[in-house]
Image 1 (cartoon, rainbow, N blue to C red):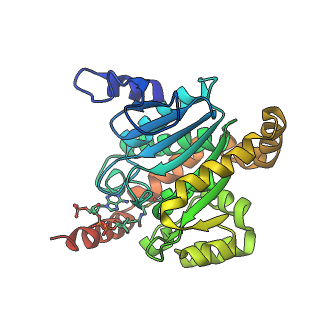
Image 2: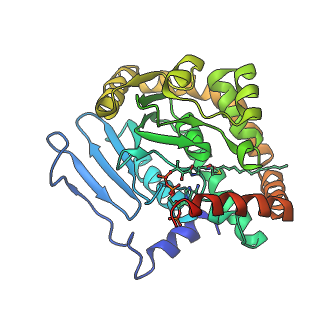
Length: 296
Ligand SMILES: CCCCCCCCCCC/C=C/C(=O)SCCNC(=O)CCNC(=O)[C@H](O)C(C)(C)COP(=O)(O)OP(=O)(O)OC[C@H]1O[C@@H](n2cnc3c(N)ncnc32)[C@H](O)[C@@H]1OP(=O)(O)O
């Protein structure tokens, strides 16, 4: 289903996204701050600063399900069309888990049409974020594996909470799957080829100190200062004239974006045939069961 159709489905009577509002904040935020609510994404906009904080709230682990991807896409599209917003900070509504990455239940026991729809939504969100004209910051206030790490890598800078429990990285190989070429390219563009090769083959999840050392994040700060630091760094990015910053960003990212645009359909087909393999289904099911067993 295309984004428009998925949005329609989410807006059907009964959907909690229906009637989402952008009103004056009940609390928090500066003068004139606005707060928009959808089911899984909370937006706190500060028009005076030109910044919106987009908070993930998809319990229990902020996984990127099809619905979460769609809501995030809608929310970003709205912000892109809002002339008062020049920068966005992505964060988790509750500290602990920034995002557990792609929702594994979307990749297990479904049919090929579902896998294709899901992968298309992952591509769309990546394209929207990676090509965004806005300045994007990640205030990483929790653990950040795989697809969660990818989200943060689409941003222009990353601030990570100084908590050794919070790890970040593309750990796909540890699950028995692997990061597709555009995940890899996004990481190469951030930390370079050799560090990416090592990180991806070993499926490394970096502690804050390691992430800082390898350049996966730009700053590690005390947990209660992640958002305020991300906002203060944002003011440096917004001090640059938009057109100059945007042209530079496009120049840096265009080749990577073009690769996916050129191979988009093939990438979907490759994903569908890979994820549909019995052997891959089995490893994903075992991994999910292990996660679930912990709690039962
Ligand atoms: C030629 C081929 C071309 C293309 C090939 C492409 C190949 C495929 C590419 C796919 C790329 C994949 C990207 C991903 O993002 S995969 C997801 C990776 N994520 C993880 O490994 C994280 C897994 N989760 C955890 O480690 C922990 O849950 C976490 C540390 C995040 C939190 O721990 P905590 O103890 O707080 O919480 P629980 O583990 O108890 O989890 C609570 C419940 O949430 C469920 N859960 C967790 N993570 C996920 C997830 N990613 N998706 C769905 N559900 C998840 C977990 O099972 C618990 O459920 P129950 O409440 O039912 O027990």
